[in-house]
Length: 151
Image (cartoon, rainbow, N blue to C red; front, side, top):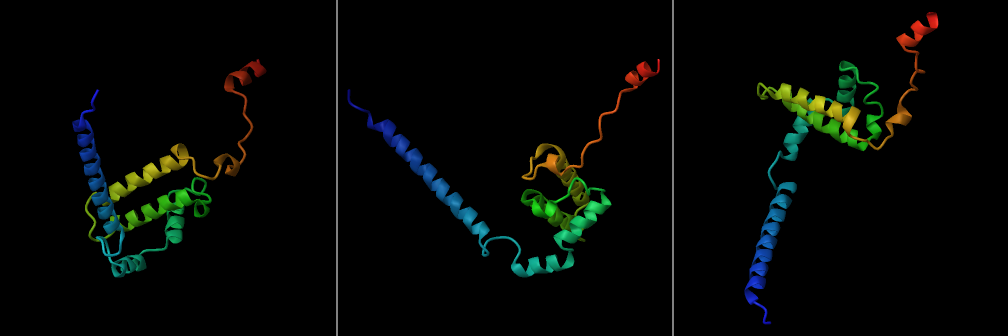
């Protein structure tokens, strides 16, 4: 049974199209990641960084303001948590900038709340929270058991 050359040529054309699209996508992404691509120049970034506190100073302020000492303990040594805080730090600076829109601060608080949820519930960070938590108090007897004991 002779093979039909049409299905293979269609497949070859499609593969070539996908490869071309992938090559264009790689070029676009590579151009965005190079210094010549879009984004702030290094001079602009330096000006922004000079106006805002360091990540450590900002994190200490946030920890104190929102009573997060136990939740963010050891964040400096935790690369995942540090990366999240770096993003929040930059977003905080943008939200409280003079050019910020009316919802920027609300959006920052929303992102901050989602971060806290991930820290406390969803994301298993590299450090084991169970080992770093203070010991839990011993279980107390329930109110019904206390009533039985007194009766």
